[in-house]
Image (tube, rainbow, N blue to C red; front, side, top):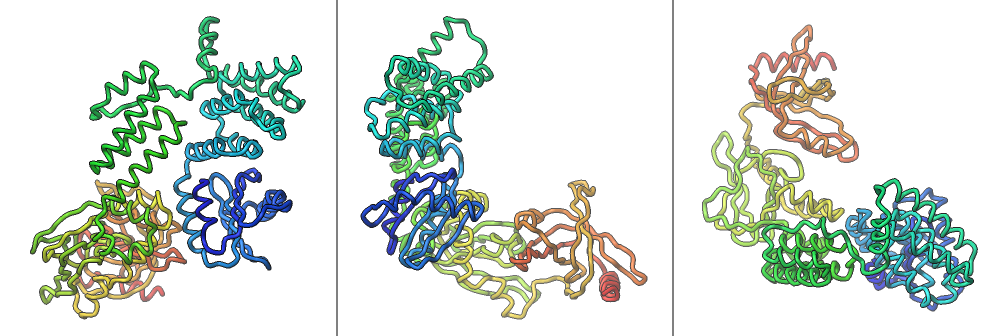
Length: 583
């Protein structure tokens, strides 16, 4: 987080960068001028603004002397002051990126602990306060370790530090925190250590909280066991419960690591894991390297420097594994994605060569995959009533499949290789990327929009791939989901009829969430439509072959349904006449 904030401060026109905790305390501050007395009022000033605005997720402020951007992260409020808005787009993108990376409480806890290690004594109390919502045995161990170094505290910071440590330990539910707090109170009675009555009260209250929480979560033990437990929880090396460490069976060093952990040689076990991460990354076995990093976290979640180093080893190896030619081919894509996004996208794809004449995708096929053309060519063509219709030859640096990927649909054209090497991105891998990097979906969708879609190209030919002519009409319809046996499994939802043919219908529906509409793709549904004069309701079962977004703002989508049993021309006319009459 400190690196992230420091990098932001180095952008053009930035004059200060602030990290305000969710409780309103100043956790970090970078100022590009000489500090003055006014800086001490920053936290109160911004806390008042945040409170007044009812804790906004994002906000922008324009002042006489500059411009400010505020972004709420899980760890606190990042506030960036600028002389102008030249770097605003970059700052927004960076905040969205880091927001995804620190979305879990565990990661927030690790970041705050890392900040605590590097913070000055005057800064530590506010970081400890921010850590309190994450208080657990790991936090307790760090705070207890701090207590051991109490004699090294700066005199002007000592009272505050002891106070906040005592307060936070009460929420950790750690048996190991009881004895250090007792020792602190004993030394106070002797006239040592504590110089603040508030700290005494905090220590006493925390002991009561710990007594209650420990009794609730721990079974009663014999006196000898309690004494042993206290010895084991006395401040010392940061050791996790290695008995719960799960090691992949395919790891050759599995026995060695287990033996080291069993013998209490955790640091040596960590060194072995780091070595294996380096070997796996060098061999481009990135999945294995990531599993080893997870193993490292299991062994000791507080080994922050080693965990960070492991991530850097993997990231650097991933970057180095991409050929320079690939960056050249996809230069325009690298301009809209961050380097980390581009590297992750590359490693989320699988590489495949299609020899000349091989079919990549067939018209009517359900294949939600993006195909990145790295070399060679791909012929797009459609099969219409008049035969094959050539549409376009796709060359390196272009992407195909966007129509079926970003909107649930079957392929409306054929894709045939003319001898091409492609990178394939599956929908599931893309969802994983979207979870990791907020905004990458819109960036990739916008990039794909640069190329004319196959559907647009085919429309220009004024030919048709449809077996049956469609007739535009209107009217209300009801649709229900069916199970595999054809039984209704939902309450009917309403839609508006758009057109009808002997093969099916298309209808407009409203959905507040895009994914709910997309989930209808490929599903069996029953459509109830007015038919005949006088009108009665006819029921038709079919399959949703496409879901398209018609109006992003209004959340309107169109369902394209292929009937299980085709209609005859008179049935189509009855539907058109009935709904036209009802309008």
